[in-house]
Image 1: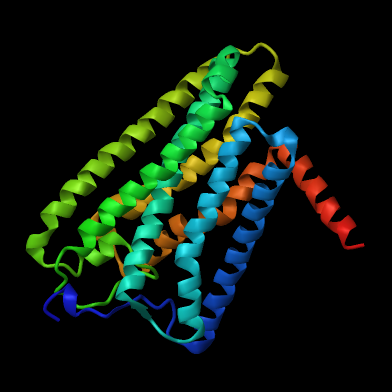
Image 2: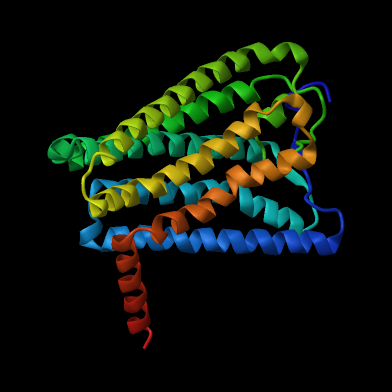
Length: 311
């Protein structure tokens, strides 16, 4: 296989070899996928239908649920289909589309988590300016910037990756197409261009991470000065779900892409990919609904309305 022009398909990493274990993998992924669809769809519907939740925080949460639905729908269904039909193949164009969509949703989600940190910072540290700094027009512009940034980032990376000649076979050692695994198939002298883009991306991601950390340093400084215990509890309840989602997202992605080569193995890479690509979209709705009374009340009213309609 001399170069990427002769590639018609890639072969993804199979979870299991035995048929029974393949069906078990299909069932587990199906359960996680349905839970993610249900949880995120409930949040989107509750925020859209309940006027009490028409605030910047819940507007951004609605966008997060949309991104979670997109990210898990990019990776999981193809893996489930391959296990169900006992195949590993994905077309060249399908692999490129999967790389683009995964990068789009993951990068947009990290940008959105940065915006959500700013929202929490203004709400707690600059409450008198909240309506001015985070009006409806400002929120729409921030959301548009998040989606636009994700699109441009994904377009740049995908174009760079798939313009590099691939001459090391077509076996992708992952259950979905991702750039590090595609680069392993490239010719050794073709790394430099993509390496420059990766360094620029790391700098941008590090900048977002530092912004989140500094925001929370100031948030906790203000919260700890609140005299009443009830006030501190309310402030922490606003911040802890977002902080938990950021920690889950950042820790799994950092371990996946920055772990030492000596730690790398197909099985470990597979587990880590599941942790950052599959688990967060399923867990995020649970994290946000557990400690949020307003959201729980809205979900309760939504479920009651659905039950009433079916009576």
